[in-house]
Image (cartoon, rainbow, N blue to C red; front, side, top):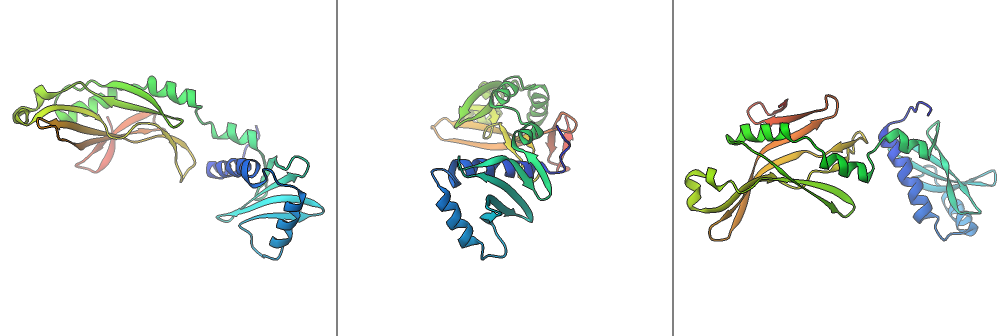
Length: 235
């Protein structure tokens, strides 16, 4: 694949608007729609999202944060071309997906299932003062795979709080999953918030965060948050 002089944010926007144009913008439209849109918008000097006509050809053009995205429209199929021009660079939509290098849904699931927990357990053990061993729970949440970490009941380590607690576990607040960083366009593993979850003997529940872990893609290491220095450090 050719070397691209675009960012991953630009690549994601190009793919998104390619899909949007074909699945929504142009779906069930005809040539009269293109003609009307191009005439009504031709009077504007700056466009945000326009259909324009040049030399009897139609183009779907967007201006986003100073960048111009341009797609040729096939009037027979009423779809935009897989070839997109971002400013002065011509790119191919399937190549952009390779360029992004995202894990597929199945690859995300496997990565979460096989995630090494040793460093996270080491950090949690240091923060709590007891040996922490996590269990995993993988689930599909509306098309996104999520990982939940949790321990068995640790009530024997509750000290004087045994008198008021029925159960206390260490778990992850929220779920661990992959997301897209809006600033860089990179696919990243979410931050891991470690949490006490406890149930009172009268049935009330509560919790408290005691640690945070992140995965550093550059070093391929987990890093734990140091509450004294207010910085993430290699575990």
